[in-house]
Amino acid sequence: MLKLMLLLVIPALLAACAASNKAPRPPRFAIAIHGGAGVIDRGAPEAEKESYRQSLERALRHGRDRLAAGDSALDVAESVVRILEDDPNFNAGKGAVFTEDGRHELDASIMDGRNLACGAVAGVRTVKNPITLARLVMEKTSHVLLVSDGAEQFATAVGVERVDPTYFDTERRRRALDRVLEERKRRAEQEKSRGTVGCVALDSHGNLAAATSTGGMTGKRYGRAGDSPIIGAGTYADNRTCAVSCTGTGEEFIRHVVAFQVSALMRYAGMPVEQAARTVIFERLQPDDGGLIAVSRTGEIAMPYNSSGMFRGAADSSGLFKVSIWEE
Ligand code: ASP
Image 1 (cartoon, rainbow, N blue to C red):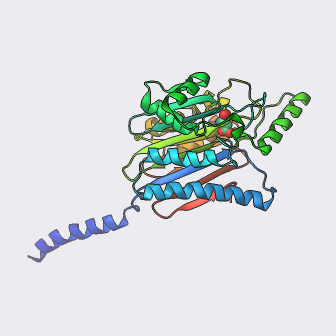
Image 2 (image 1 turned 90 degrees about the horizontal axis):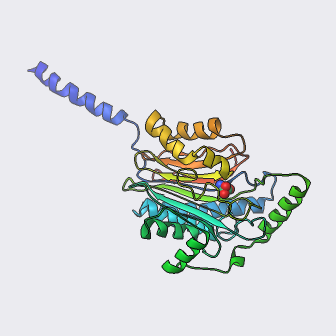
Image 3 (image 1 turned 135 degrees about the vertical axis):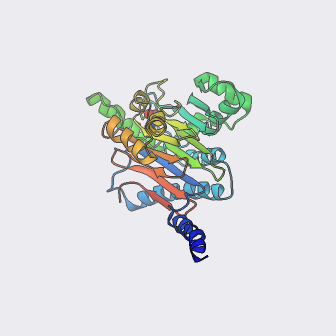
């Protein structure tokens, strides 16, 4: 009888122990944001650094709170990017960089990890929030990418908020253009100053989404588009792997299909998100090309960069809430 009882009780005890030793439950939701790579120098005035931190915290808190309330990753990614677009600290929407002929041409893309639905716009000039237009391309057309006048015409058709192109002007970006043009006169040089924005999110329903928005690179040629409106290069989301948003020298991110490559390394090589993201940033790209943010389907966050810094933030349902600019 005792033997029988032991036979019944011991396996139950062992099972209970195993359960309590299991890794902690993965977060119910997770979010990461970026405000561009390669950015301000550590010696910048404290007030300037603080202003960036506050901008990042505001956007991150909004995204975290909406995910906690059960909102979808897609809605959260779009609304967080809208906040960053409206913030003149970043190179997207208000505060976008100038092209070489003194205009603004904005690019954005968004992707839904549930079904690989995606939408993007490039070279828009009067759309206040390009990320919303990108989402409407996804939802209201059978296309993925609309550019320039065609995208402007679509913006009129769907009635998104428009602004005079001077709305995007800021003194700081004007000075950056002057510096680049000056420098170009002296020697051909590719401008590195950036400030693109992005958001990746895992919602409490287990869905992933990614969104990216930018003014591009200071002094870019008329008509140039970088990686930000290119699905697979600057933005990618797939519920089977991860959601990714990139920032950096767009041409390199297109060449290396960076966002998709992170997902592919997870899916086909079985890498965890941190390893996949670091492999692409440190083994495929060159130093100072930029960085990315990624969240996996189980809520792990990776935010590697190979530039001097990257404005970024991460939060999740376990209580993580942190914004940073450089390594700490
Ligand atoms: N990737 C963007 C572009 O090339 C720029 C950036 O991320 O700062 O347009």
